[in-house]
Image (tube, rainbow, N blue to C red; front, side, top):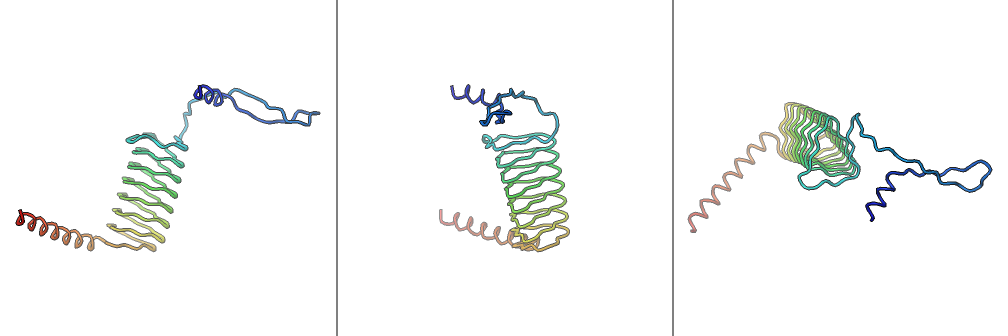
Length: 185
């Protein structure tokens, strides 16, 4: 019953207008035609997709939404989250992305777990792993960074040399712990 009422509500658009000579507003009702959009972008607003949900389109714009996986030519995320994205151009504003494979990634006041891209621009954001040819960052923190060229104000915990040393040290600790575990059995 609720679905029927909401369906009917979606089919009608309501507007208030004042008729000439009448001091009170009159409610006008006009039917709304549901037309399939043929022009980009695909807009998801607001939607929390089911686990494993994915989108595939040329242009995708997400606002206050969460999607598991997106494959698109251009992806724009505003106050939303994407689990994994494969795209030519990614733009994130106040959002989060799990993994990105892109030609160009722009992140503003957001977070990305892993970025693999040709060009990365991060403004007042954070990332765990960034692998890119060119990185331009302003007031940004990155845990692991591997890049040909880095410009701007970025705090990097481990560059490629630090990451290599960290990996070697972690490997040694794990090997020693495994050896000790075998001896105690």
